[in-house]
Length: 275
Length: 173
Image (cartoon, rainbow over all chains, first blue to last red; front, side, top):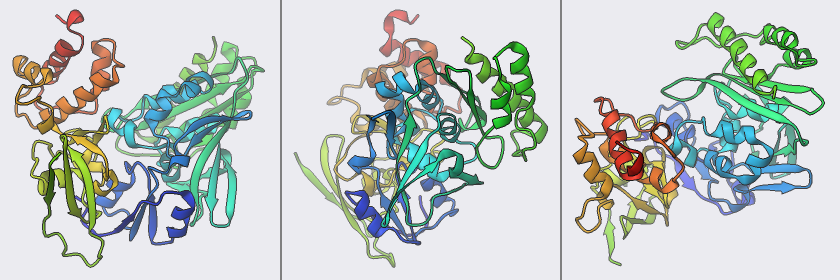
């Protein structure tokens, strides 16, 4: 049960949702992070604005040379999408590792990004796939590069009065390889460490981690070290994993063990892109 | 279709926001007067007295509260009842067909797929969803796609046995 009282509205459009949005309200999509937070009183907004059924936020589509995922697309919508399987297979691979089927039927991509749990899977994948988060407010829309979106522990560049509407990805060139590898916490299925990696046909890479530090991050030292993807180059890249980071420490993993896991999952991800 | 109107005196709130929620529960159109903070699980159990659906962790980790909603298995504890206005919900009470147990219910009995029985309604609703999704090809995949439903008695292998008997009988020994 939720032990405090709040108001609830379910507007039909993003514009109507924006009209209702104020500092005392929270956006509700899948609710699989927000509702547990309400139950624990970690959050106590006066009003929830339910955007889960707004049709314009649900779709997955091509737009020119970009693939666009609506913010309220669920993990299972992404897992089932033929466009995703064709162009961003890492997202189907990663979605299948989120929680369990019931969670995947309700949790959303936009919700996961806005919540920015330091152990969530999507942020690493969105960083590796060069995602752009599109947000709307009453004054217009703006696009935030995923590189600038995650700013800290449960913190993002999202400002009050803004709603994530979609996440856009450049369609990877023919021959691009990508993978998401995760060391899973077996009860919650969150990532103790997750590594998303993408290899462009020219050999350049994007490598991002979740679960390692207070916010997901791209590891440019690893990206720059993969070179010719020889065994020596990859080992050198792996050795640079998460250098200088302040590691998460919890009852699942110490700083040393997390750093070790980050290197192991970096190696797994890079090796998965060899062939 | 018969319409049931049920209400309960929950209007002790400072916030005047009791909502009318209309949904189909186990094939029957049902209307409730609810404040927004009532979960679908509490609406089923406390307001409709459908106590087959269980509250385990109430935080989306155990799967005991699994129900089918518009053809998909969901966690009723992490769902606000008001958000499911106009939806169709099937709970364990609606799985049998006119008194004839669902094949999964029969298999759970045959395979002794429970001890305390607390997770069983969620397990069966989840297995109904898993079978409709039709993704699992073998026992390991059934196990993975049933991983959201925990059994703390240790009946898990019988639970998977029972599901396999119904879902892929030819591969099940």
